[in-house]
Amino acid sequence: MTSSRTASLLQGIGIGQGVAVGPVARMAAPLPAPDDAPSTLTVEAESARAQASLGRVARELEAKGQAAGGAARDVLEAQAMMAEDPTLADEIASRLADGKTAEWAVYAAFASFRDQLAAMGGYLGERAADLDDVSQRVVADLLGVPAPGVPNPGHPFILVARDLAPADTALLDLDQVLGLVTSDGGPTSHTAILAREKSIVAIVGVAAAADLADGTTLVIDAAAGTVIADPEAAVVAEAQQRIADRLAIVSAPIVPGSLADGTPVPLLANLGSADHVDEAVALGAEGVGLFRTEFLFLDQALAPTVEQQRAHYVKLLAAFPGKKVVVRVLDAGADKPLAFLNDAHEDNPALGLRGLRALRASEDILREQLTALAQADAETNADLWVMAPMVSTVEETEYFVALCREYGLKTPGVMVEVPSSALLADRVLQHAEFASIGTNDLTQYTLAADRLLGSVGAFQDPWHPAVLRLVQLVGEAGRRSGKPVGICGEAAADPLLAVVLTGLGATTLSMSPSALADVRHALQQYTAADAARLAEAALSADSAAGARAAATAAVAAETPAAAHPNTTSEAAPTAAGSLPTSGAASTATDTNLKEATS
Ligand code: PEP
Ligand code: MG
Image (tube, rainbow, N blue to C red; front, side):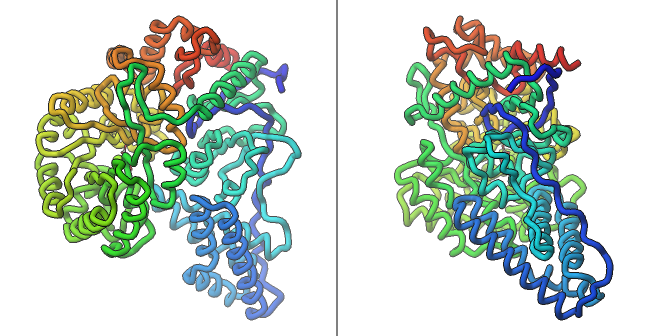
């Protein structure tokens, strides 16, 4: 697996905490654009060809969805619907009427739709890749050639692609695919969502992935977001040790989240659909810390009815009898546009009419949602908590809490995602029953860096001491008022940062279910006093990288075995040496590599 060539280090966005080692196998190149020459067939004949292929591809995608189940089924069914979308059919027909071939008509119609979707950006923009995939499948069917897809080199491999189509990701043979590296795609692309769900080690947005040749050995590290090509033997050995350590962590018995001294830290799931509750329960979720209701309605032009919503909420709550389930009311705007709540053009949508502001402007929609939640609550016996997104003032807190109480909802709370509400957390918590810190937005607003914009992506790091200081303020307000403070942003899924957040006063942590095992393990290594010391070390730094390094150094100082974070000591099985390396925390090996490549 090793090579005498000089190692090179590429950076991307890691999904999860895993590590993988293996040779590259590249995804087959996309089909070339079809010929724009006039058809030699009649319009009717070309139309029949197009319809037959669109139907075949739709059925094939549905069948793949049925076989895959879970989130993949929803994605593949949505793609099957794209293949038979009536507006697209009209676009294809108008090109056929101009005497074009079915191949060209399909290709051009899908391309024009894809461009419109890509221009919308955010969640919808990332669906553009789904349309490309359907188009390629239909054109391949028309040409009678295999659809471009996952290679089969006959041995385990790391799949390198521009971006993965959902149909490919859904059916990956996990005995063969050791990991994924894509040049496109962000943290909310389908590749990322499905990789997270299937716990596949993935690094997305690696701009230079196109240069990775078939057969090149890679070490990929999701926690650090790195891809090392042609690694040295020591790097491979260290990665394999970490793979073995992680295997032990993810197969450890599932117990309630707690610190080493027994302080409970309930570990909850972030969910976007009631369809994924079984997996969350199986991975040990002790409840739900964030149910993102807007994900249910992203593709709807009209507000969902009370009945539609009630049915979803009943399904969710019924899966967690006696357990806490925190439902967030619709969070529209910026990266999650909901046409029925705000479709006005805004130059700065992240600073616009979003979250609770948008709901307040359409209070009937908020009232309907609270009605549906109260009905579902009455029908089930979960412990329902309800919270509002993007609350930036004490007055907004009072408004939301009063409205919830009107509907008999017993535990109203607010998300702390804007620095203003963190700074006034003591007053916010005089009204709200709990606070839940959304570190994704809190980081965006604290560092004034759009969380979707690649050019300022480096600012989007919740380790930044300015963000940690705000978390500390909320934690202290929670402690003084005796009210719970949860974390539900991606930060809670970073094992070492999860410990720091606990040290800053977080009482629960909520994350993608696939991150639960790593965080559960990390918490078990530290007492509450240790966590407070780690938090203090991180707070004293000047930068995100400095905070991460300070917390890592504090770990090493506390546990002698952890002074060598790349080895696992038999003598100290609970030492942080087996903690997955967090974020960009540099190991000695990384440093050597950077030197080797500079
Ligand atoms: C957050 O902002 O951290 C959060 C949990 O909400 P979302 O990511 O859905 O905006
Ligand atoms: Mg948010």
